[in-house]
Image (tube, rainbow, N blue to C red):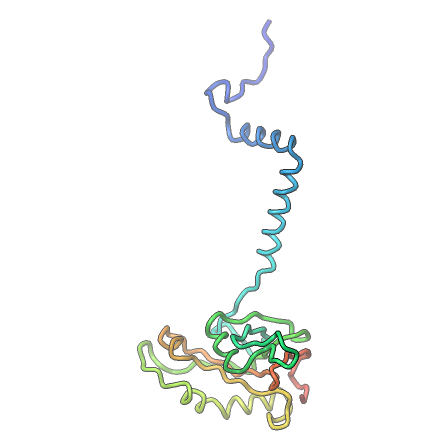
Length: 198
């Protein structure tokens, strides 16, 4: 009397099912533990870099109170007397270029957001120029700085940084801007500047 054995799909149709194929692959992998270890390292590395990859925030998504790390284009991290957070010009260019990372306010960060605004100007409107945009917002940004830090910019280790769209961003329809603060010496801020009197 013939034994009743389950018929594999491979035997019936001359091809293996996905389940059978996966079983064959696992059997083969068990015979090569070095390959399994290598695959585990690759998968773990991919997962680590995926989870720790910074998320860049664009100007339109900034909110008052955000603390940021902006990769300024002119940051100087090589010399001890350099400006690791860069200049205001370099930070604004990077903000409109790649965006910024959110950072913890009680840890190292390059900028804090004091207020955000949207410039008027319909799509296709001519660029009014960076100087004109700055002039229109400068007094309000200085007032926001004073209210935030609890001291005026004169004599402070901090300075207001006004971020307005450049001509390229304007041409792409970006009308968002922000009043930020940073350390005047281009160093990173290590504590929350709000109410600090720095």
